[in-house]
Image 1 (cartoon, rainbow, N blue to C red):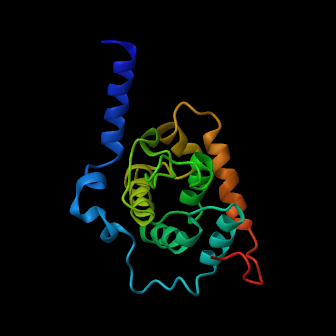
Image 2: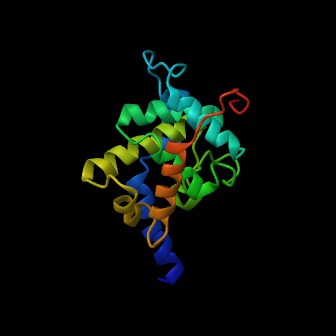
Image 3: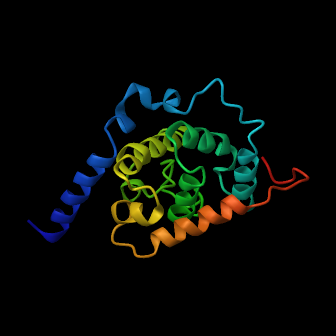
Length: 178
């Protein structure tokens, strides 16, 4: 077995482990897989505007999905800045992704394709909860060795963006929000 085949085999194993087949082929994987919570009030949640304005500042295509990020974070018990911060590190907030992949997270080294931004936000948030936080990997430093090996800088970059998002002051004149 050549070295590249061995590497691909190991990579495929980890992709299969982290990304259930439902992501790509299941009937549930369309818009129904996105965060749907009739009681969630994204209009009055100040985090939504804060995140939307932050992402807009960086011309991110993800800005209008701020309610989805906040909703999924609340649904799965995540820090609301974690998944958006990962997109900052992995894809410049969704600007540098494989065409039509909706994969701003570096998921499967960019080889995983989702059907929509909503689906990808919900899926990544759910897997972070199930495969990371539920196993005690609850900070970027603890998540990094599994999520982004062998990077020694990933955790620091994610933590940096989390802090920037959390401390960002939304535009009081509503000029930024899409």
